Length: 271
Image (cartoon, rainbow, N blue to C red; front, side, top):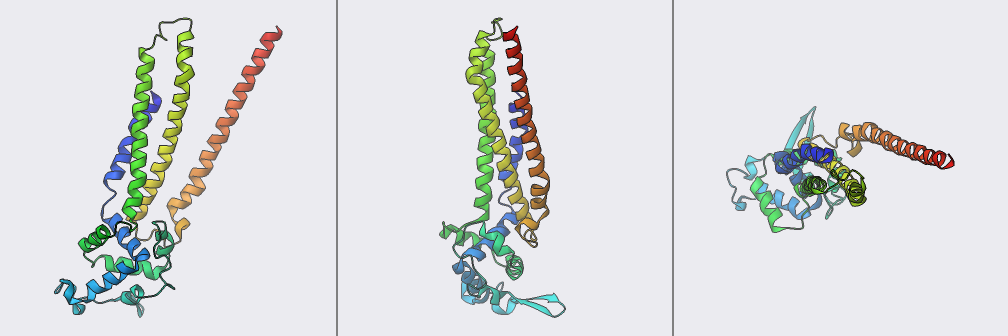
């Protein structure tokens, strides 16, 4: 019952995370990831923003868009030059979604993606991704984790319910000898242990999915490197040590209890 309650409490979080996995923040990461891994998409962006024949005359005509982004103190970022750079800048062509981290650490790329995303028509990004199904998308990366997490939560919740019904319908409560309950436990306890393992796996998946979603909402998520954000610092410095303490403590407690039972049985046999 306790496992079912935990599943029921966490399931809405996984469902909500799945439902918001296509918002503007995630779409901005899709745009940046396509820039990082698809040279054809970078050329497509340049073509759209400069060529009047694209059909966006009046909105994206060459004279209406300035490729230069002034950053103060005389600093100017030419986004077109960045897009047209060679492999010395774009080192992740054909890469997977995780390439976004290394690519985003390059400040010129991150600033270029942020500046252009506001002006490039979203429907053109969507059309390019639809016409190129193998293009990696951050939304797919996030949706994979949330979908698996939600399905594990749902399966675990239904599993807990079925185990509870099975135990309720058994004659274990009426059998005062305890043999019926013992026979149920021979299969029920391993299933409960398996359900507990599924719960821990679902929580871990949900943790990483939430981390990926939080990163999609933050344009500065890799400014200090992939492991430089507070989410990663907290994961390494807080979560992992606490989990390790409880894992070691639980194992030691179990070993101590097993030893006490064994010694007690030995004393009884000697008596």
